[in-house]
Image (cartoon, rainbow, N blue to C red; front, side):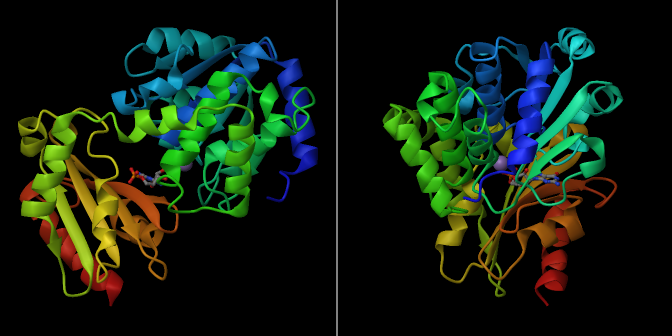
Length: 347
Ligand code: 5GP
Ligand code: MN
């Protein structure tokens, strides 16, 4: 890839030198890329730079990706707010990863915005909130935040281009986060993505172990759910839109845990006539649906999520929310809302 801006990399190096305590954060409902990038940077800062670095996430990550964190200090604000606030109060440097603005950090938003620490953004989403950060590394033309971070870390003085100098947990986390964000090299893959993977493998990173954790370690519940959703719930419109809705009731019935329905939205895209796939998951507790949107080239999942679901993300992979009773009166109206929004969007 084009090297990340060397001037900003040098500034980041200086800001790290000047900091004693660092907070790494990422978007709400952290996925593999969010967890991988924060963990990787945390390990680098602790092991190579001797910093008091802690990952502070808005809420817990799913068990499926817990191996990425290994024994890294990770706090979840929703579970231990006092500890998280105490660390942020002592923080000299906040680095926000895989998240384009503090408003995607849920409960942490106000605390982070109000912090007088220096702030850095490292991300690959569209529309970074440049005003909120002193240093911004942002490009959508990259596979993942983990890849973006990898190229930035190689520019640090002590690493000097040698991936083998990155701590092992950091290398594994970078490979895992890139793998989840690209669906194991299926989407958003650039020449630089293979170069990154190649450098990590050459440094001894265990890819087989990463793949086994990511793709061969699910609970049976998830696979049964996939069978049910594809068999009973998938609806495909004449316009080539696939819709699946997972209700709160079904979530309970399949005894699902957070993250266990992740990625199912991609599956209908395997059907030739499907151009866009929409997956709704109902959260009964707070009266809303989380929406995942995936599209094939030529249709913008990001525009659709932005126009109809208060969301955004990447061109072909986006997300948002549908609230009741704000957007729809009752949860049963969700499907009708999606159908009418699709009619407008695909027209
Ligand atoms: P997922 O469908 O995996 O939850 O999210 C897909 C992509 O859309 C991710 O890159 C995520 O960051 C983005 N995304 C998901 N939900 C939202 C949201 O509510 N707002 C915005 N702006 N982006 C979202
Ligand atoms: Mn990402």
